[in-house]
Image 1 (cartoon, rainbow, N blue to C red):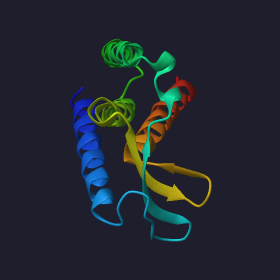
Image 2 (image 1 turned 60 degrees about the vertical axis):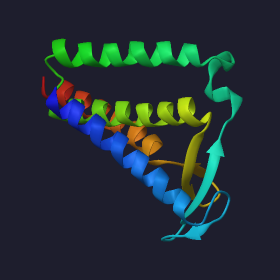
Image 3 (image 1 turned 180 degrees about the vertical axis):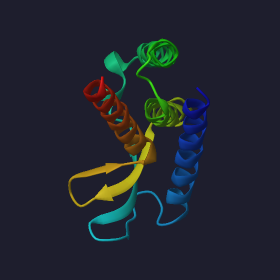
Length: 145
């Protein structure tokens, strides 16, 4: 359980710091090249589809239930090892980072642009990579069982 909370706090802190840094240069809407296809381009993501029905209460309820389910899973499932806890911590930390933005600023700050494909942030990456870690750890545990 310590791994889950440690990762959650680390991802949340990293997301906050990265978003702050992204706004220091080049400014909202500006663009700075990184490596290859990657560039930094801060964009506020306030699309209405990010709140189902326009209601933040629905998302708060869903996140609360998801967090409760994740904590219960880690407590009762014998397959939930350290990789599962780290993955859940990363995903939940990312979700909390984006939720913080949504509640405090009314929009999520995305700033990592991958060519013309997408723009995302550290929290988004942590959610995806964390869930992949959880699925991978369960696949490995199931194959070994």
